[in-house]
Image (cartoon, rainbow, N blue to C red; front, side):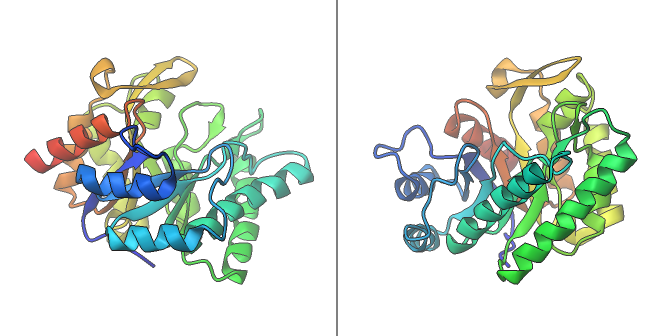
Length: 279
């Protein structure tokens, strides 16, 4: 399984500056911009076919671009209906299959909603579905990390504690740490260097140094209320302490992929990379 040798910066999807907007040209543009990774956005549908995947893999390898993906938004591993549970696992699996064929290594997804249930019961339900999902992933011999993402609303399952505990129970699972979601979920907390350090210390303590050496991170500006995340913002229009995040990542010698989900895609990704390299 691929493990980046340093912290790489990725656009969330095809950069706006890509003239012919498809995945292959997006990868080439990411290389032109001087970035090291790109996240394939499968949030509405898996938009790369199994026939196209080998070309994507070839171009990514030629340009030394690491690929991750964000699976469908339509996932709830705590759904009440069996049909929805099966559909949720299937959507994650579809993304994992294509990402694996593209030579990528890390699948991100929002794990689910509490639906008014006790958090312990939700954790148990999600864990059961993750076990089934990983059996399916392993039966297909997919060489990818399965990564539930910290979520931006208190109604969503996916606090940093829940996801670290969940990751500790499976070999092929690690969290996607979305620092912007942590900030929004807590209605403006999780925005100091000390709080970012606490997150990293918790990961290192419970999941080991290997988890710090193999991170999948999301970061952008974010708009929020007492109900949590509302929408992503450009970094300079938001109160997100991104410099603090970057400093802590550098202090911990974090490696992996940091995906910028700001609306101006490549501009903020380049800003994050430049800021990180200047620290």
